[in-house]
Length: 160
View 1: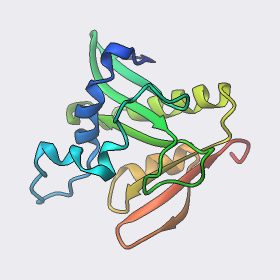
View 2: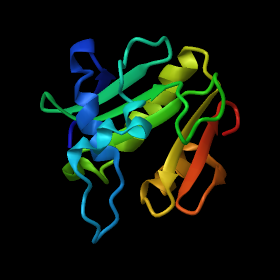
View 3: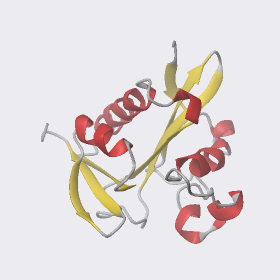
């Protein structure tokens, strides 16, 4: 499948609401939460007024001029928060585009973008049962802590 990865435009920022919902990991057999779950404070921080902070960066993946995925970062006090210099990362792909390498390429592109802007580390939180844990490990994220359900993973420049 042919796809391209590019910077998300300001007019596309509202799409982050959809991708935030898509990013919620739902194990097999579990009923998806209602869409308005993204308005809860712990999720809203990922998208609220995105683009207004200097540490807000977003990329999208396109297939035939249709945006099918997004990866974005910002420094925020989310569960994956490490410190006030380390952006937290979120990534999401529509289901039918998963498992084809697009997410891996989006992650690599975002890491390159962040390195170019002087960032040395990036963190994320992921549910332990999420298949994406292996992708994050392959790209160079290490588990730094966790709780019963989630891992906090950290990528550090020069460590890989």
